[in-house]
Length: 345
Ligand code: KG4
Ligand code: ZN
Image (cartoon, rainbow, N blue to C red; front, side, top):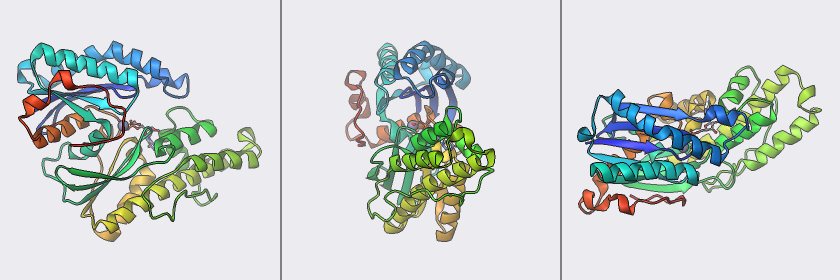
């Protein structure tokens, strides 16, 4: 089954063709990142206008790259939330129009389910359940228990900022350019991660909640303590970046593996933009080796950050799990924006 999927929940406008949930025929991503560098963050109106300009050429290029025509496509899929309202509407309206025009079913997909399924791309075999999956990005930071094929349970989320947001805001305080995550991670490479001791919020709590806003404040105080950014030597800035990154990574890793132990996971997954972080990957792999667990991190870096291939993969699972005849459940008339953070199969 070939699904043409569309993703436009934030600053990416993307489309992909995915067969049977794993085989990627084409994966096109246009980003409005350059526009947001000027403002140091995503301005929703700017992102939505840019998506409106790019959506049609992105879909057209996807079919060309896949060397397929509309007759070859069995269904459409689109991210219907959570995300930025204006950006989501661009993708949803494009998908509805195409669904009406070409008489294809339309599968609405929860964005975070897309990230969870990014670990199924290019891997035809199912994971070894139960799986604990951490999806960690700029707009979301969730821990899921994946019990079996169509059974996902959210264990915890962030009480304030997501880890990607903590990276981005920390980077801005350190005078680094947007997006801050990759820039801070690069600077941290030459720093000492034990130079400063930043807080590990909710570290000893047995809940699976995360919190990163206090950490951000701690960095601000430390910068003031050091006499302000302009008075801090380059090496000291690298030490601050490495120590700050270490606090984020340790918070994520602690909860992820506590959940893996509690639920006797056989496999653990990382997903979302922050899963591109080298230090997070290093700690993740070290902990899995200690426990002899199987692991999955998205097969390619482009599957870590927002993309439509992951939406195509999640859509296939939703299609397969549909209780009634799938074509009846997935009609374009029923698809609307859903800004809640609730996922259901
Ligand atoms: O999944 P994504 O593209 O968008 C959301 O759904 O939010 O993730 C983007 C986030 C940004 O906060 C970015 O700074 C972060 O992922 N990120 C990183 C790295 N690469 C991207 N954070 C830390 N280290 C990285 N190497
Ligand atoms: Zn995302």
